[in-house]
Image 1 (cartoon, rainbow, N blue to C red):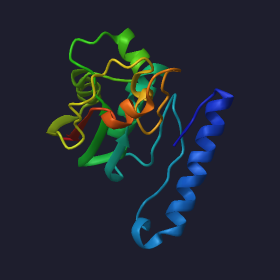
Image 2 (cartoon, helix red, strand yellow):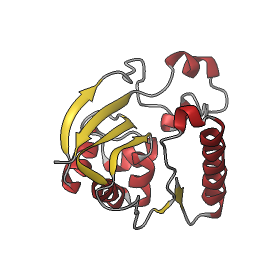
Image 3 (cartoon, rainbow, N blue to C red):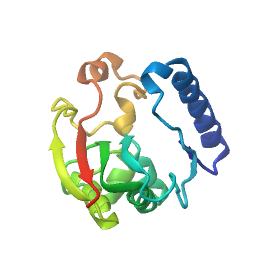
Length: 179
């Protein structure tokens, strides 16, 4: 989890981190091998260089992009992973050709953008999966990805059930390897 400057966001991350700590501690038989590492988003250090086998991130890249530290995060992942280590990324998927401005507003990023971030950091794309694809997601919602579950920030006067029926966002699932 990351430390951020905005007071409201800091409180959110502190609560999220504590919730994760509690979950890990309460399920040591499942999560005993996991380590929670807190970091500075401006210059992330996830541990000793070349010390990790696997890094996973779920629906975070749009936040990092919006705050200008996406490249730093991917560089941090590359640094902490061993040669042959795996980076798994799940992210809200925009249609190719979506502008950076529209991506920032909607929370959806193009696959080519995310792949480019990883490759710029030194990763090689190993595999794509459609396991998190959702063809029912039209990606044109008034409040972007946040209109859909689990957030459901539905505009006033619109039918919440319509967005619940769509389900969660269409997401890319990407596997990268550190050479």
